[in-house]
Image (cartoon, rainbow, N blue to C red):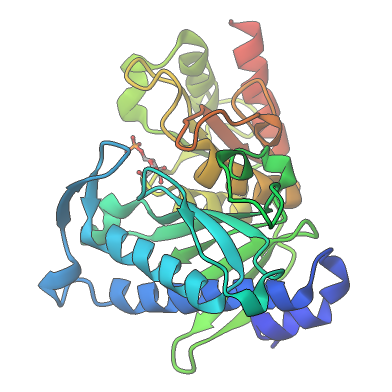
Length: 333
Ligand code: P6P
């Protein structure tokens, strides 16, 4: 079985940039994800990382202690590997500049946008949660200071995207634009091994993921699509599966076939999910796995970001299911 490092070296020709810098990026991601894995697996045993931190984050959400731990773990690990020049995190209002050590002045070309711990309301109830990350090359000259435009790049400019799912096992899933591959952590040796090569969405599936609790707030076309999923016809009714953790719902749907929808609602007119560090990386993975990702009308990876924490309606999954959803949006608008 290939380790993550062996896999990257074996497929080095697939990466357009320095393989050393890619290995450094992954070294940072692995280091932080192992630290989070360790805490997630025993969160019920110590008071120190369970429950709320008492802080309301930039999203106006009640930050969990483990959110803060995960945020710090990634910041520190990217700093220590000296490969990233800037980070935008769900847990911080502004982007974070990482001062480059002179000896690597030309190494630190990478911009990371991250949701350090997505689905954290599930931490205390032992349901899968995840980290989602998105990587770009900086746009501004290395001789200049970073600017917000380094972070507000279209999703189609991503060079690397992925997630770590902390569930019954800890799996790192990523793409560099040459397919989607999953690596499972063997905690006994602290190594990620290739376990899911070339992950691919089935063209059509039988799972739909949406929060039915918002039904009263959905537009008429969303309600019609839900009723379509539920009617007895062809390969329907679909099965409803929604765990309140994007990474968990996405990972299952990519393997089994399905569609995940977080549309706009009365209370969230732009949807809930954030474009830069949730929808763009998941959309890159979706397309690389043969699926489709949009806001119901526009391809996610083509959306020009305006603000760091902007939200967007989001649908992703098996091509035929997403296309049918988009048909409902177009026909009943
Ligand atoms: P709701 C978690 O907060 C998250 O960002 C996604 O991981 C998840 O799919 C969604 O929000 C759940 O939101 O409103 O259905 O509880």
